[in-house]
Length: 270
Ligand SMILES: C[S@@+](CC[C@H](N)C(=O)[O-])C[C@H]1O[C@@H](n2cnc3c(N)ncnc32)[C@H](O)[C@@H]1O
View 1 (cartoon, rainbow, N blue to C red):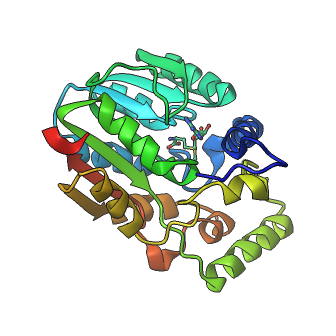
View 2: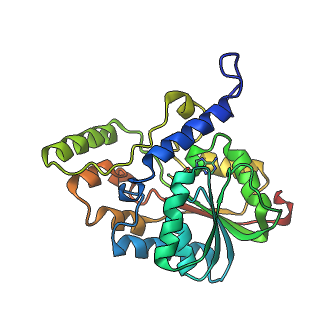
């Protein structure tokens, strides 16, 4: 967690305000981002399979934390689960609501903080999250909350991408910008960049391996953890994208860098 100082008495609160502002700005274009939206039927299928394989057959009572525009929440509802989606940012939730209406599914949406959930202990069979842990000011508190609201024997499913952090990837992203400009490709990339002070408050912002996550879970007494790469998701996300989007997306050497951790919670893990 970010340390308090005289200039900024509550850096965590300030970081969350900056995060909310960034996603309010980025909400409208979010679904067009490479690696975010479910751009093609193949991507949708790959994520549906990832959900089915990591959750098992339900139907379950699910919580999607940091649901954003509700992409995963609505997919899960289409699979027959009873889904609640929470997010810090009202603008993202507005898109989520529309998505559920268009898909003709019922999802409970709540504006809430993933590190202080407004739910009783043991309320859900599973807590899922995608692309969210990296933006937690206190990832351990977040996990503790997710475990608290999951039923004994329930499951925490975590999807994320690992940053390659290589110069090669930075060069690819710069090249993507140039190609987009040259080809006059609409820059459908949502600007949700965080100010440096907010980035500094995020311990897992540059996650390059799954080990820090496994360590956090171990500290919480959770040992039954498995990590799995999802190369089929990465492949589907690359296929059918423009050259610029492929370059801007995850580094192919880290293909399948999306990881799922499915964890059967033990009684003693609170
Ligand atoms: C990269 S988006 C992921 C959205 C969605 N899970 C998906 O897979 O498309 C990150 C989301 O986390 C939300 N968020 C950030 N900090 C949060 C917090 N403390 N509590 C709840 N949501 C948060 C943001 O508002 C944003 O919608």
